[in-house]
Length: 124
Length: 110
Image (cartoon, rainbow over all chains, first blue to last red; front, side, top):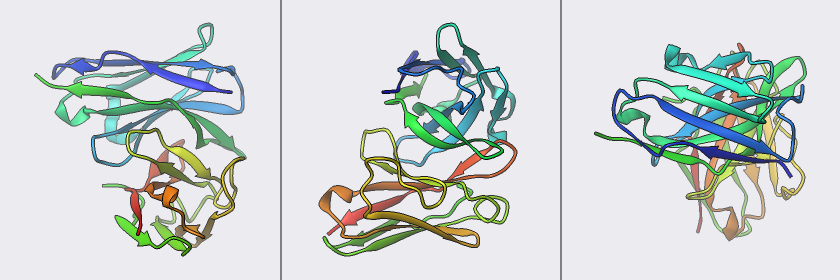
């Protein structure tokens, strides 16, 4: 059974860089059928797609986050990572990593497996 | 502000049916049959319950069904059970490698 596990610091100060890693087990991150992504959920609020990345390293970000987001993939370790720079209190959220199944002739469209989530709090 | 619009809350009694709407636009729901729905319990990760508008993953009861008309997708839960009380989110492919979520709907089983 596929499992995803987020890891990273849970507390940051404003202006710091958020760094999270998602370790994938029970399946290969190098599968051509899937993208891998990050989604966040502020406390008491809804879900927001942040980014998707393919095993080749090609990534696509939510335009609302602009150039603050960097993603990478390490196929040798079967994991992928997220960096979000210049964080503020508004970035406080539970961050989920997920697998996105591809559609026909389209990239990742269905989030079929999710990690348990990692709470990241930004506070001075 | 979410790109997809859902009612903030719906409710129903056990055994009844409820429908949650997800209003999008021609650039997302209206253009692609890649609408998915997720169930989320408090403090838990979302779980996929509907994908490709109408398909159910293995293990999801057939009480859950999806549909789409124009720019609006819908999730219907029939034979409502207490365990269905949760938050529900719709999601659509929006072109240019992006996916977008609805704001979420809280389902209360009376």
